[in-house]
Length: 384
Image (cartoon, rainbow, N blue to C red; front, side, top):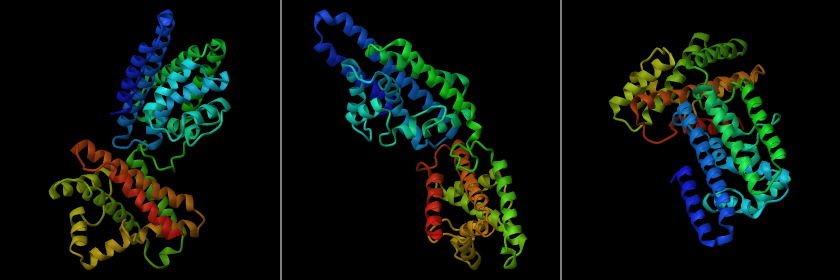
């Protein structure tokens, strides 16, 4: 059962139990409270659906952890903003909060959450992921803004902010809170969202971009430019010619594309097709075709052994990966070296999305992400 369905079910069951408990003289008041519960939880469900739809359109197979976790934190964050100003929690507010903690597995207890909400302090990864002010923006919002930039609309952003402020207002009503103060809380939230959204361009392109916001052609051009600069300025050409080093970059990319295709759950003929289409999609032109490259490795020829030694993403890691970092360290341009590697990772994520859209079924989820994370782990061991 997904978050939206589970939340809807939890609300229905909770309201049913409340209906059994209420006294006749409280029917009118309880009905009003129930309407607040229903609207808040419906708003929570709608926000989750909007965020999920936007991110899925933008990211294909990749839903960052901050998005998944943050989507379940949104209602709690809206409540916390009110609770911090209110300084206490009423019985009716507690009933609503209990719905969430009874039905969802948060990495903190209800009591710990209430304390953190009242004091404005951090608890687990809550504020790190979901908080947003003009000076702080959590991982959920960064990833959501990226997704909006690529595949969302202004209406999506407006709907999300409207629904969250609606939750804040209704939650404050359950607490008999001063509406003038809660309007200020809502305004501060909206201003922070708009401010941070307008500064989305400040997010560094050197980060691994799970959404592939930067087109593959631009990524490839940056890789080539930075890599050639590393080659020219380091002393690596004392051992191997520049032309050979440049061709190795193409082979490194080809190796990665072939690996991604081979890891899919498709017949061999389709995998070969994927390799060719992946290489064409990226725009590389190595001296060997994908079929020839894979055949050399599969047959364990001398050439295949050399390919594995140089470009493998397995264990042991191919020597080209640490060579890139070594060149960067040698000339004090480690950031450029990391950008080359991160750009390769971004391209692979986009290759997988491209293949997934065309073939619809690749097998297990997150092939490219797991593949790149394995390379990162291997590089960390090599560089220790």
